[in-house]
Length: 206
Image (cartoon, rainbow, N blue to C red):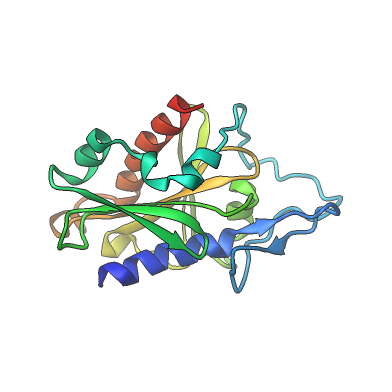
């Protein structure tokens, strides 16, 4: 699978979860997605299984500079000593990919949505609809983390996680394992580890 294909799959998954909530509470597509993950409709009580975010994080700074989501040291710890950050304008929003030059694996891609995307609730609601994979992972210091994907690519060494930064927003963190780790390590663990580093950076900038 080429680097471009990997990035497109990650962006497509985030686009499918993107939605905005008008005043009547009915979700509508945003970010150019052809379909959206449903969220709570008007007058419907929130799902009790959706974790809440007690301390929301403002993402404005990182939408303007997505490659600031990981420091050089964090990126090297995740990828290796020879890592390069490449800012990207995905349809879902500003993004940055970290990868060793000339390769497609291992790679970390972080996407900040253009607008509130319904948060973790929208990801949960899309299970069995827009997303084949929706699996809650262990939260990071109170911030929910959910493995998700249009396809379940874990056997191929790929995993996307949604890091809940507020009740209405998530940050997409995609991981592609090195060839030697495919089938031996869980790529969602790698994506969650990257989300730990991203969250540390986001909270430092609060």
